[in-house]
Image 1 (tube, one colour):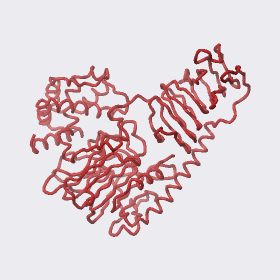
Image 2 (tube, one colour; image 1 turned 120 degrees about the horizontal axis):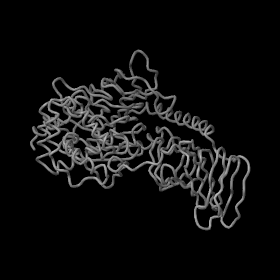
Image 3 (tube, rainbow, N blue to C red; image 1 turned 60 degrees about the horizontal axis):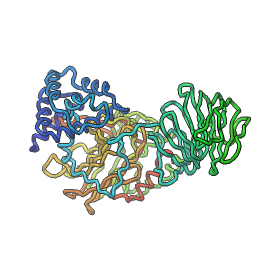
Length: 561
């Protein structure tokens, strides 16, 4: 396919994704998918990813079909569009999910419309993913059903090889090994538990878990009645109550009821609890290997309840915010810092964001806020800017040319509903100018304009943001180094992609926009790239950041530890 043909497909896709297709678009897209079966299969796969990102839930064929109808309803070519794609063959590599089989014809019908990126991705440069680079998240490709959500952390430290988990993370079934600190989980059934480290806790499903070791306090509202916590010897089935479980390193355990009723019975042959029992408020049992079952009376002590957890969390957040603020104030004196928006000042009627970079910020001025509203940031006392409407943006101007550059942002993505969502884009696409953005598949892109061409150099990461990351603060960093001929992407302190430059050159920004992009007059290719989310810290360095620097920024800046 020649460059002009690829450009037509790309433009047709951009119009379709933004809900503004033209009458000839169906002909262009139908021809593309009909001429290349491999192309059609890849498009179908990306279609399913796109739909999952939009639903932010388990796949739903009714919702999927409705989203397709909503995109084309009222268009003069809608009937012809549907007929053409309905006749296309179903890809033989259909996903294993049952819903994929039920809607195979529909997926083939619109696959080309939602995923032309396969044919056009070289526009942004090769996509190397060296084996040495750890794929931090691949949830977009293989989303797992969740059992619970981690909603609070207080000084949490995890046992290796457990991967540190951030607040707001959706948790699939599996072990959580907490070395120290406190964690609150909210199960999808409605039950909530507080874990106190050290604790080995295993999630089995939205209404069932196992405490292998440690202290757990469970609050189970009536809607979650039946929620069960098992131990190596007994199972506690809640009937709408609050209860605690404690298993020590010797295997001795306790189950005590704070309020309501709990049904307990043995969890294995030879359990100390030979007959099922019903425990009410103030009652409990204690057991151990080779010991007799003992009755306990009175309220349990030594467990953190919800009100105490909230007080501890508030103090923990205050300390975290102060640690970040100290780091932020020190960072402002970095001679390599060109532009720095910590969004700490109140949002006044002047609608400006002060550039707080120090000695390195010569000729770089404050930012102008357009449309964005102030909102809470990573901590209750921190402010941020919200980007919701298609005109929301912050205007900046960074003059000069840079052999090295680092772009840094703390972002809370609320939706990947644009083909491309802007982090920072230059006004034009002239030689050496940079476009930093996120794709609808959750990939991070740093694109650089090449000479005498609309194509770009740069690097696209593997998918690093998926449905379970929406609404969660993430730390994104991209570094550019002309001298070493490398671009590196980071997410939450870790490298997620690196690759070479095709044409090393000095990078330029100049007049640019945060969280949005304004198409040039007459340029209709993907005219809308507005971010759906929040930004509460943004920085530009005239030097490359090291792995250790990026990781330190993330560790000091993440909302909870």
